[in-house]
Image (cartoon, rainbow, N blue to C red; front, side):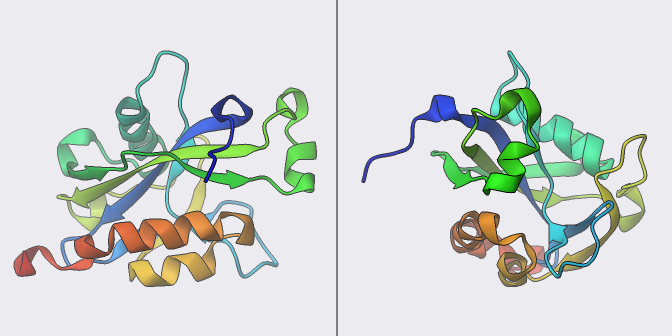
Length: 167
């Protein structure tokens, strides 16, 4: 199988933040309404000169309010996972319409803090609310064009759904 041309895909990170009991963080996208596909895991672009790991920790803090000290890195995917933007999303990208989609490095992180440490009410919030949910529910809750990536993430990170007590 031939991989897509990485230069045509926006570099991005995705974060599977696992509670000690094995559930994963899902956020309801701010401003999303009318669609059943409004929940997702944190994700965001990689800035120029930033490593995927640095981007993951920055996005974790920006979107969820959690500092690096409150997580334990379980895994970083060795490869990139790709998805294509549908035409309406590409059209809304403005000057970056040449991107066909996103390529993502995914990170599995164990949350070491308390629920009170999670903050989705920052200056420019990505999420309007959040919850802990079983990882296997996430693919059905994401917008359809990202679903195959979420299915792959759920498959690869399934072992982290065990509670910390079971490990």
